[in-house]
Length: 342
Image 1 (cartoon, rainbow, N blue to C red):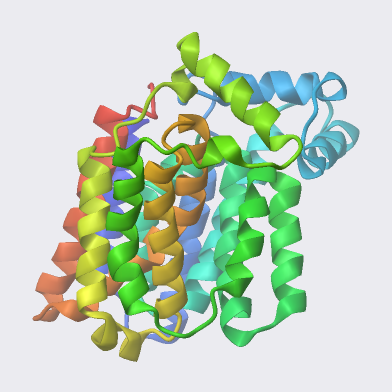
Image 2 (image 1 turned 180 degrees about the horizontal axis):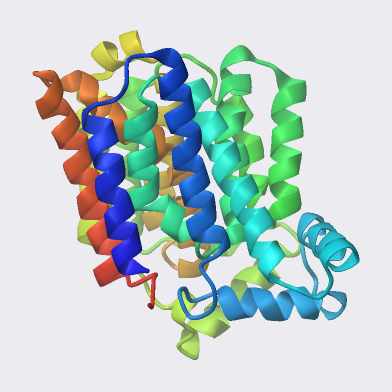
């Protein structure tokens, strides 16, 4: 599978370097890339990722497990139409996760192929091949960005509720409505250093949230951390990937006016990215929550990182900058984080 992903990346790389100019060919090729990703994720089989067997068990034991309504509904549909075969679960989730993200990418940027390349290098593996419920939730987060810009509350709520129906962590989409379109460059400039001051002070803000049910969830994660659960172990808020993404954020902020000229959604995307970077150290005392929310918000990576294209000249050099970042992320995911086990 690692070789397949590397080969797919280099295929996408060539298309990103030399994208077709004809609109019909461009659309057809874009659809083909989506079909390739759906095929890889939907038919990956057992032993490729960490969560495959967990989802098979959840598919068979859904009556006894508290699950999101969409997962239950899709599982029941599969059983009624295709029988007791979990293969169709992964195929349907791959179709939804990939297709919704590709639709969102087309709505949010003109750099389709660079965005798909960055998506493949990181979030495709993390979401469509591992965290399949969170993957669809993040897809709906991307779809929410245009309604936020247009101030279309009904459409925003529709996409947010659909995201929540696939993963309850998507509740964090709802506050994004209040971001607005006004630039807050000073706020974005100082917010991350301010959060690190809170981190170094030892103040545990999440531990004092007075919301029923939240405290119990936090205590559960803390107990898992104490017994060494893999998803709840302490996180390093100075890891190289996080610091690199922070550096990219500040470079994009430095080029704010230039990039905003080319992408009208840039302000909202940057605010969401800033929140993702802030919450990672801010919620570090409960690593499972910090990682989950950070990964959900950071899906805007797939739009923002390709926007570096506008900050460099000549064209092929700027494309290679984005491609190099994507390739580095792919190597980290495959050989350091090791999300793919086969």
